[in-house]
Length: 335
Image 1 (tube, one colour):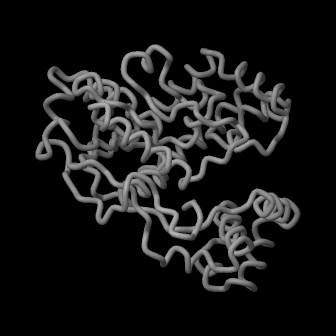
Image 2 (cartoon, one colour; image 1 turned 45 degrees about the vertical axis):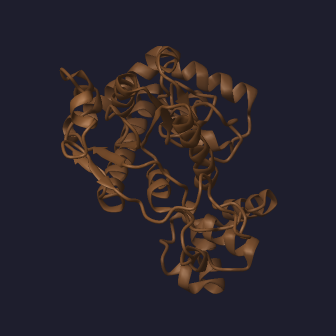
């Protein structure tokens, strides 16, 4: 088989199990598309594949960033493009798997050519956010870039931060950059894609079981070790789902039961957003009302369902492509 396989889905939907089984069946290489699994630290809390699973087939882009490194979509797209190219050169089928919708959309649809924002500008904008709050940043954006401000909710901290830092760094509205033709990487064809969208009630039960299993496996200990070694509260990795709640417990601000309850609620909310994104932003991925590990456990699967474009997947062309890596084209790295 040649081409590229894309597997998306919410947290705890069995994406990694399906990717592993498929990679074993067809001689694939698994390429991570989860922003938190890029980090070396917190492998339990970010649900990274186990060392045993990683030893069974080649895995790429797992544990490649330090906890302090920003995991931007532009940087990921560069890394993913190289990993896909290397996999094809080695005679393996790249299998891109993850739940970070922005990564999958950039892979399949390209990325606006927004220049890289200098670290000093990002830090200064973050400091303003800390002082003034999201409503204050929204008011500033409305005064300087009313068109972009009209797109954003006053409490949307991350998008407000992004809009202001781009305006500061480039002197140009993020809306203007987003109107530019997207930069794309070259993908092997055909591209086969599925979105795992299992029943919500069972997904919620699995999320709860997985969180409990993480705690039993030592998730609190690995978070304690990270905070001892890296006390900076602004580490990007500390934004991972369930981490702020568990950190509040370790700092004595919540008892464990309350922390777990809040972490569980936050994870369910995140899974809901992932599902919404897949349905509306990536309709070319064939929706499957099933868990990936259940598909992988079927006799003959995934050789039967995932190796044909007519059974469980769509074949599609992502559009014009521009080489193995995002082109710079004078605008800096896409972010």
